[in-house]
Amino acid sequence: MAQSNRLGSKRPGSKWPGSKWDDQRVERMLGTLLQSGVIISAIVVFVGGVLYLIRYGKVPAHYETFDPQRGSLRTVLSTGKDALHGDGRAIIEWGLLLLIATPMARVLFSMIAFALEKDRLYVVLTLIVFVILLYSLLGGVA
Image (cartoon, rainbow, N blue to C red; front, side, top):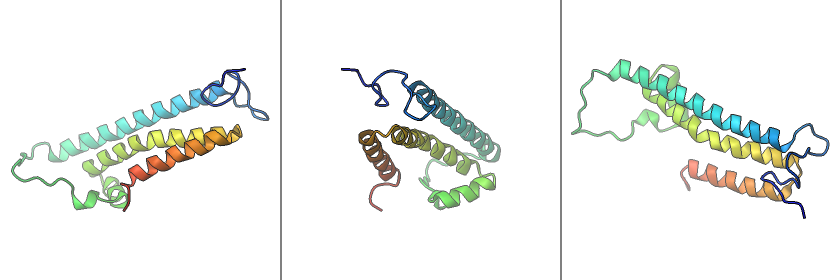
């Protein structure tokens, strides 16, 4: 009996029926997706950090007062508006959101790959993983 690889086909590097895609190409694309997501999010966080230091770098820290979360950084929409206005903290937060979205994009892409391969079991399993990731990102029950 042939051994299945990660994407479910019966032989390594096999072409999917009616498609120019093969398992190695999908794996390369998934790897590129993860690398690109991490690099882009690191650049966004770095730019936000530089802008933050330019604006607040010389302000003395007051450790006796602690504001764990500014009101404007509570929603994605308000963070986006602040980031568009050059707020370093909001840009850093967007970079972190991109970092969180990277593995979610990988799971979504894997689900599409499994659907193209017509592998229903892995589509369902990947969908369950995606729903769990989305649930945990949204903070559980609202």
